[in-house]
Image 1 (cartoon, helix red, strand yellow):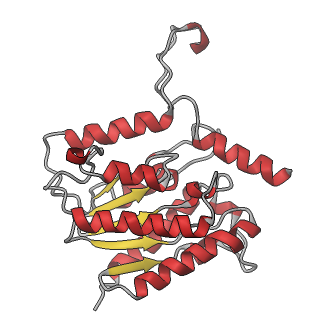
Image 2 (spheres, rainbow, N blue to C red):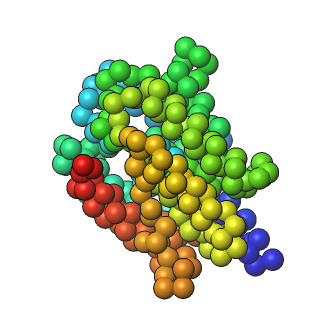
Length: 268
């Protein structure tokens, strides 16, 4: 029962009803509840913002790194956690390393909170084929694409969930290869959850299968983040997470350090 409450809390954060900062400002001395405001779910605003950024006339050629994923990737862009006061996400870390201060590390984040693998496939599908066309811009030509996907498909999962997640990730890899053939694709491992049984039965088996797939296919790389987020007993390090799923600012710093180390290690 306690574990169910933990996951329910994480899901509530993931599917928060109103985007932080989207409500209309209330007049001085009054509550927001007294002022009409449209209802905009966080993920809707996030997806709309990405679409606007991609549609802008400015060149995307400075982007050297592309991140594709769900809320865990998305929350690189959040600073103060809007659902858990006093907690922070990865914005400060992102700005330090991927915000453009170092040209070769300039990155674009396509993560959207709540996305399952099938939703990402739709976002990457060319607009001419009915998708959102997020990889359509020809001047978006990153050197490296970091991909982390699958944990949301463990909820309301297809059976067997490990097969569904594994095959879905491979479908996303194929789409990226099709649209950005010059990019190096790096499949990142799923992070540990707070549930040891889920880690044992789903997260670690998926990670092992993805690592084996990468080893058998040239042109792909695998980045195993899992050990960096566990303690000596193999359990999730709670100090690196804001909830059962999403890293804290300290967690994003650990992730950033692993990414920087990985990028410095040029493949032979």
